[in-house]
Length: 96
Length: 177
Image 1 (cartoon, one colour):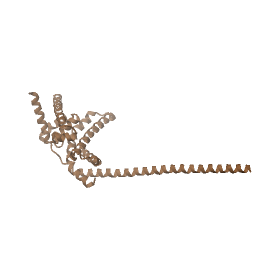
Image 2: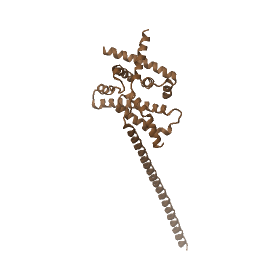
Image 3: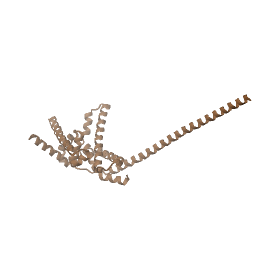
Image 4: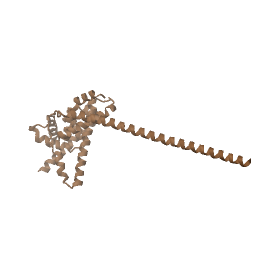
């Protein structure tokens, strides 16, 4: 009995929550939201550009390193060939 | 998404989001901040919206999560202030928890204010069920869709919330005596 009456009281209190008025948002809120979203969009664009720049720089760096190795190994091979050639020429001269 | 479509979404749902945020934080300035954050999230995640639920339900879900995160970070800031400046945390906590919901009409001011304070002390999911069922006037089915629960689970959460509210209000009355 007591439980029932307290339950009813609680229901009545909760029904009072209906009376809380819904308010209109402040008029400048719409503009603030749109401004924030635009700001975010521009930020993402800027960041995308930044990442693109970083990726391009990395690619160029990697290509330069590769070119350096290609050139140095080629030069070493040429040097070896010259040394071999000079060695065989000297041998020939001695033999003669 | 084109800016025109997005502004249409903002126009349609900003009142719903603003008022739901007000039910959680009771402060117009905080509700405004939350509304801005919610639409920023909507803008960023609109591509992930699969259309399995209504857009309204999806926006409700984002708003609830944003409000709960906001309250958590507010509590965290209060504790941080306490540890940093050795100020009385209960004082600062009261200054946050006292804002009176601006939608309360004068004749119910005291009763509703006490009730809202008690609702604020409920666990998050119970508070959300009360807010959605009683303040937003949604049906149990709608609440179930928003919270991804069955209607039975919503009903049981509501009953538990009522029981806890009763307990909190009784304790407060006894404390006041």
